[in-house]
Length: 365
Ligand code: PMP
Image 1 (cartoon, rainbow, N blue to C red):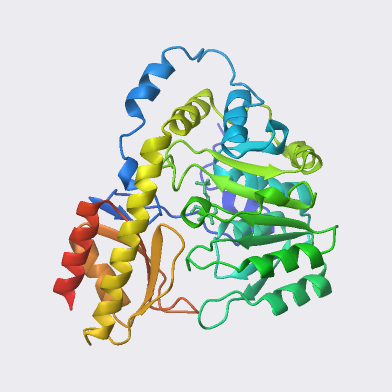
Image 2 (cartoon, rainbow, N blue to C red):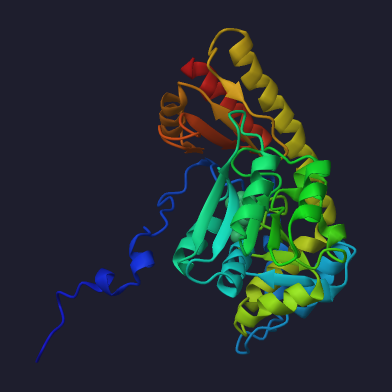
């Protein structure tokens, strides 16, 4: 019998896929998880209602391909029609669809940098060309360079993240309006509003005027539903129809859809957690500012945030991350290279988690 025990499968991969590494995730869940911008205030919040709801789900049947009920609920929540809503298994899936739908080998995609990594990963998978327009030293968006690059490079897709991850910063309204006006109609403009609820400003009300605009949202952040994977897009019907060319028939499980429905029903709990998160973000911002002002770490820089996380930069980044890890708190680090060298991103946790974080950091200095 001829066996195949030494096959170099990796070599069989498409060339541009070979260059990518499998995404690394934490293998152990730490006691206090402040590394992925989840909403810990809502831990366990949906369990009971979801368990009840699951009893009536026909699990032997494929899920509703149109995610009808979920889309209706999202439409009501956003004061929009359901034909303008597309749901995905996390906004990650919609980002992947956008690239699949519009980007072939050598097509160009423009993003800012640093920003959320999945735009680049998907572009590279598709063999497209990623053009990253750097933020300035203060990690602010550079509108003139961004627009100039779009007009010169003629990309098919543009990703704008507002508020941005991992900086927490936003693009001013008049600059966004200018971009909408000046970007040609044959460019698809994606505005990723994953952190919208913490900021409150949106371009969702412009989708009728700009058919080339698509706004991305998620239930993973403010809504505390990262484990169920529910993301959505708001766009003109022609845009939704176009992206749907690559949508598989049963992309989102009945369980994901049910979880989304339960979550959207718990309006007051979600709102309360939002208020708490913003309050504690302000508290921690002040705490970090004071570390600098009191001379405990004069290298510590706190970037203004409109999200549920804070980006910090300090020569002590590595030491702090280690110290936190020893105390079972995980935050996101960015290594020693590039514009985010010596930076760390801290998700706002619950009151108890934030106090523990503060205590460990105070003990470090
Ligand atoms: N966009 C941004 C800016 C994000 O930060 C994230 C999650 N980190 C996502 C999209 C993906 O979110 P989802 O869980 O909906 O896939």
